[in-house]
Image (tube, rainbow, N blue to C red; front, side, top):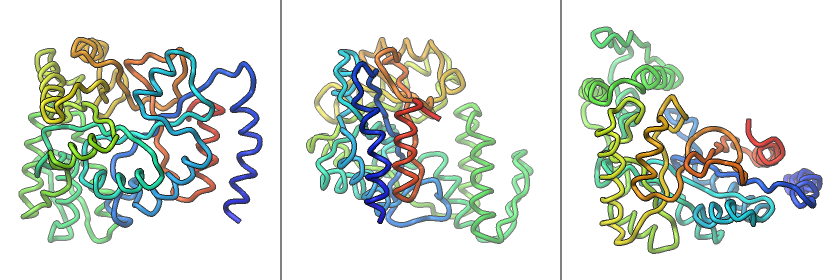
Length: 323
């Protein structure tokens, strides 16, 4: 039944995608995590069962390209119809443990943008908040001393909502102040997981097995909040570290958080160019075409968790160019 519905969806799309004279578009999908199973504290992330059927549908109905190949073909005007790329941000361990085997099983490649400062036992700042709220032993979390309010934690939903609210409130703070807040909140909850991010060896294995590795700064700051010297250090040190680790040049960069002007500026784009990257991606929500700025390529998030809405959204992306 599902396959029949998908085939019906694809019929008019096939004619549109292959129409003579049509400007070919590129869908660059962005993922962060592929969980072992659904997690109430990370309801925006997919699990490996969902990722598997998503990759199966992409392999059957789209042309999945590596991001370096797609960018080259985008510039040349030689994109195939229904061109799609798969990307991951941050460097989570489940990218290696869960996503990588699934990608291999369908013969697909992906680009993994790695924030090098969290490898080998580090933890992203937002994960400190999420895991701290998950394991907080009491039902009321009072953060008035940090000017962050008071939160009721009587249910899974209240814990999820509290974590998301706190993350939104501190996301765009100065990097040092944000870290202080995270440390103070984390200390309220005892031991937190230290195995959420990849190890050096796992990044190397991805690269050796045909996956592309890209830069994503050292500490995942909001670049727009940094001065020029700090931004250069975050971008250049990350690139040097990954190139040392992989013993090869890396050519692609993803802006942390990735919203143009809000999360990074034109000055940051210039720093990326001067770091000898060849292209960069943002989180602006649109498809890319030959007119797109290769230093700020847009990406789209496939959040649907059942096949029919997923395929309908992919077709909508291609037809309308974004959300």
